Length: 588
Image (cartoon, rainbow, N blue to C red):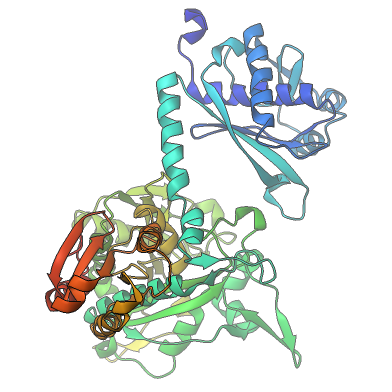
C-alpha cells in the first residue's frame, strides 16, 4: 500500500470497500452467484450470497486469496448515477438487487460503484482505490435470511474483519479467541445449563438441573431484595382472551411479535407476551386509596414473543422468557422518588454481580410517530419525558438520550451493559406508562377524597432469566461466584473405603444449604478432579485415610489452590457464610 493510498482513509469506507472486493472474489469463484447486500459493520464487513453450494471454512482462504489479487490491481472505485431502467439492465441477472431497485423511491437517485470489472448497486462511500484495503481477515460463515425474514431465502453470509493496522487486527482476533471461549452458547452446553431441541422449537430453552439451580438462586435474590423494598408478589396466567390485549393497546403495536391466537368455543386466546395488562387488572380488582400507594406488584412471569428466526441468538434473544417484572402504581408527586428507587435497585444488583461497565439511556418518542408507533398524546409525552430527565438530573445519575426508542406508552431508561466479550445489550429497563391507567380506568382516592389516575412504572432490573444467565455465563466465563454456582462442592473419596465418611459430609453440607454432589464412581481421583474443574465447581473436597480418621477435609479450590487438613466444621461454616453473604472468593 502506497503512502498516498494510506492518507485519510475512512475506516468505515475501507470496510465497505472490502465487502465489494469480497463480492467480486466470490463472483470469480462462482460466476452464477446471486448477490445480497454487503455493508460495513463494527470491526469489519460482511456480504450475503446465494450460491450453488454451501461454503465451508476451507473456502475462506481461497476467497481471501482472490481478494488479495483484486487489491493488488489497485482499481479505482468510481461512482455513477444512473436511471432506473439502466440499473435494471445492469442488474438483470441479480434478482435481489432488482428487488432493492424496485424499492427505491421514484424521486431518489440510483447509484452504483464500479471497481475494475465489478459493479454493484450502492450508495457508498468507498475508498478511492482497492489498494487502500490491506489489513483484513475473513472470519466466519453464517446463514442469514434475505431481509431478515424467515419466509425468504436463506443466504450465506461471509464475515470479515478489517482495520487500519495489523496490530489492531491482531488485537481484535485475540479478543475474538477469548470471546469464543466465553460464548454463553458454548459454556451453557459444556456446563449443562440449558439446551434447545428442534422438536420443541427454536428459541424455547430447556433449563437443565444446573440452570434450574441458577434460576432458583436468582429468584431468591430478587424476592429477598424486593421484599425489603416493599414489593408484593402476584401470579398471572400464561394465556388470556384477545380482548385484554386490545383493551391495553398492546395487540395493535405488538401483533407481529405475538404468537397467533387460539380459538376455543368461539373465543380467541393469546399466550401472553407481557405481564402488564394482568397486573393492571389486579390493581383494579378492588378500590384503592392513596394510603395503598405506591403499590409494587412483582412477578417472575413467563412470557412468549415470536422473535424472527434470524434474530434468535442463544439465550440473548428467545421466544420464551421468564421476566423479572414489576409494575409500580404511584401518585404523580411520588414519581421521582419511586423512579430513582428503581435505579438504585439496579445499582444494588450490579454490585452483587460486580458489573461496572454500563450506561443509562433515556429513550424518547418522536412527534411523527404519534398515533402509529406511540400513543397519541403529545402533552403527556413531553411531560413524562421531562419528569424522567428531572429525576435523573436531580439525583446526579448520568444518562444519554436517544430519540425514537421509547415504549409505545411512555419514555424509559434502559441500562446498557457490555459483556466480557464485547456484546452490548439491554440488561434492565425502567419505563413510564401514562396510557394504561386511562385505558383500564385505574384510579385511587387521593387525600382530598377525589379520584385520581396513578402513573405506572414498569421495571425489570434483572431482565429475564434467559438474558441474565447468558450475560453472566460470559461475564464470569462460567466460573460463577460460590453462591450462584450450580454445584458448589464435589466430594471425592480416594477409595470406596471412605464412602461412609464422604456421605456423612455430603449430608452435613446439604443441611447447611450447600449444593453438593458425591462422586462415588470407580474412576481415578485425578479424573474426578479434572471433571469437577472442567465443570468450574468451586470446592473439590478430597477424602482419604487421613481426613477420615481425623474428621478433617482436604480441599482443592477451582483456582487450583490446595487447602489440606481443614477442620470440617470450620470448612462447613466458612462455605455456608460465603454463600449467604454472596461474597467474592472462596472464604477459606
